[in-house]
Amino acid sequence: MADITAPSAIDDILAEHSGLEMQLSDPALHNNPGEARRVGKRFAELAPIMSTYTKLQAARDDLAAARELAADDASFAAEVPGLEQQVTELEQTLTDLLAPRDPHDADDVVLEVKSGEGGEESALFAADLARMYIRYAERHGWKVEVLDANISDLGGYKEATFSIKSREPSRDGVWSRLKFEGGVHRVQRVPVTESQGRIHTSAAGVLIYPEPDEVEQVQIDESDLRVDVYRSSGKGGQGVNTTDSAVRITHLPTGIVVTCQNERSQLQNKIRAMQVLAARLQALAEEQADAEAAAGRASQIRTVDRSERIRTYNFPENRITDHRIGFKAHNLDSVLDGDLDALLDALGEADRAARLAVE
Image (cartoon, rainbow, N blue to C red):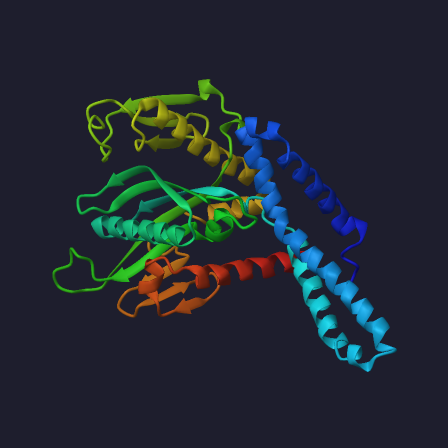
């Protein structure tokens, strides 16, 4: 194994970590919340690398000392195999941490659910998916904000948009866990609208993209926007349905439409809608710049029908199947209650293996 502590492998990270530590100790940084968040986020990303590197250095020192002392005291020789294994394991861990990563892994996300074929049943399933992600977020201590929701007659979601944010900066943020969820999700069950007890198949779609820390990260020309205001249709307290507080922004060059009606004022809704638009434009720009990413993003949702799907939720058999990696489990009830870690771990491991195979 190559020396992963060589200057080309680790010294730049050590220098960057030291520089970030100095910035965080500077009181002036707190006068710039955006920059403080960026520095804190990057510092958190490097924390596991620094921790593993420190442990590796200590283990190597202990191993060298044990080998030296073993010549005079046989009791130290017994410690050598264990220390050698510890060093090997830490080297592998550090190598994994230094491997190329998705640059958005530490980012927060915007997540959309959309009903597809299946009418009310599809809208109800879209609401089930939204609830699943909300409960998963709650398990991880993330903050979920409903930005917009178009509710069906039976209380499902024709479409809904959510912001999901981690409360503390982390190397493995919301995107690192949920980035594989984009695509068509298929459900097989007896709909509440079915009087004969027959199993139906319908589908709902999920779109997910990283949310930039600041709108200024994405250049948006105001002349490219059409802003419409209308009366909010959701819950929001007194006055929400009597003023034109909801905002719909159309980005004319791309045709992207973003709506927000969750906030109490038109200005707040416009600010939030602009943040979502920035996230979508950033994702689109990255698609166009990277052909491989474009293919991956295009696979999220082409048409929300029953034939194109990444995952099937089979209620009669309490089974969930992810068709991309062949994952199957018979704990659908737990998954819909937010117990997604086993599935997401499997998707993450498959992605990691694919990345290593390319290198």
